[in-house]
Image (cartoon, rainbow, N blue to C red; front, side, top):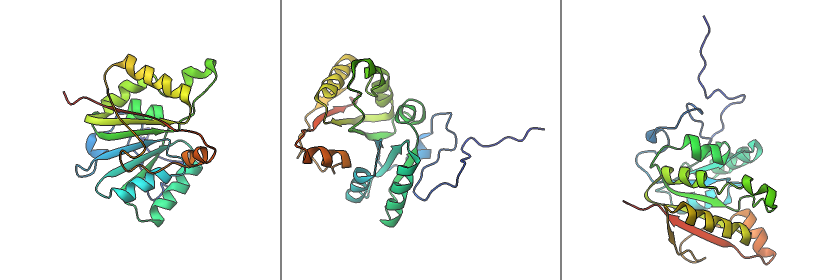
Length: 210
């Protein structure tokens, strides 16, 4: 008889502050990721966790999930969350496209943040950009009615690409987003680029309520 193993066995112990799905090969149920009906926000590619922690501190009534592929970064962010007692933020070690397309449940996320992703500037690499029509459809499905997708980059051409893809997709309402529209902590990349005199380009979209 062959023993069966659960799908979430890791080659290492799970970290404090780490979110480990029961099964990486099916969509999560809403109650597996949304705790007690609290709003859930997702930070794709959370990096060093500065944005994730800033949001979690400012909005203790909301839950936050950072998604990060690199184990070293996941470890560092989990340690920071634990030191600061930020129980409303967790980190998932996974690739962003897989998370949105295959793991996040439908109508579960109130806001999804994609901040300073790799712009893949060479023309032959544009197909590697995360903002594509299938990604936008996955985001739409994951968002609650009235939920928002927020995209920020210092790369103007990538911004125009994203604007074009959203227009082509045609299932989001575009909203105004200025630097002082609402509280929004700066990422490590944003601080670095602004110190170099670069501008940030912002795209804010909402899933219609009907």
